[in-house]
Length: 332
Image 1 (cartoon, rainbow, N blue to C red):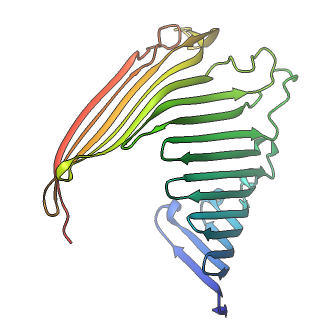
Image 2 (image 1 turned 135 degrees about the vertical axis):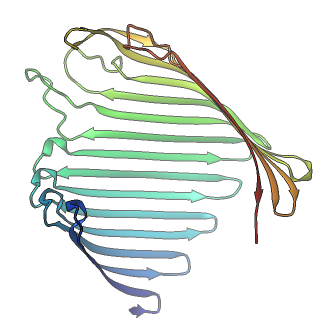
Image 3 (image 1 turned 60 degrees about the horizontal axis):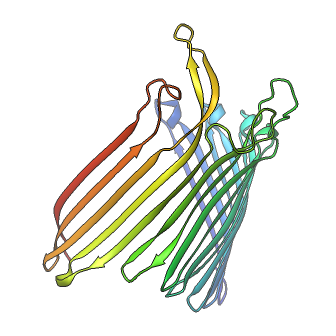
């Protein structure tokens, strides 16, 4: 329904009644929704509310009701586009209340195309469990990057925070660690090739006694390099190339397994240095109109630096090489 020269209201109803000999496929589904859109030459705003209900007659624990309110917006100015979104959701399991939760999400994205390319995208997700508050958490993400005629850079990060991680002073305490993941790269942006160093981090953080802040099982740092190329040749021949190398610093506890009982005892904390090398390339050779000869080569090698102190049957390396060739014909 048109509510103005630049706005409209949409009402939608979807429903399904399904039966089957399998209880998993015997349900009733109901999905009404209402949305309002306001738009201009370079902008748009949408408000949407919808309800989603699944009722399983013989699998009560799977039945749920979900109510969602969403706001999204978009605007454009020259080569720069901005988008944002906010939403709130309540998902309730009438016969499985421990799984019910409230979720809030939000994000922003700003991109610019052209010689001075840029992207900036922060976002968050919060899950609040109404019956099990100790499982509530918040996820934070940030992705950003820039590209100029001479340089490029990008960063991706993720952080999970537990609202109730646990009491580190309690007897036999189990503390849920916060999680941090970071991956970044930067380098030179040459005519047809990008080349530069990379950095990666995966870390668990918690405050229980006897555990170091960073030196703990599973935490790691990776350093390496990357090369990417899109190289044209005469006669329309085109080569795409991507290669990466990474050297790791990984903390792992020694393990000792009782062969009679299967009990695992952890020992000293050690550091191992895995390495990864990977290369992928694709070659396109035009033969005639709409007919292209394709060749593809993939290779990777992983050296884990594992031994019997860290694993029952350690895999020390893993390699793979594939070569493919074929012809592509495009009709119309």
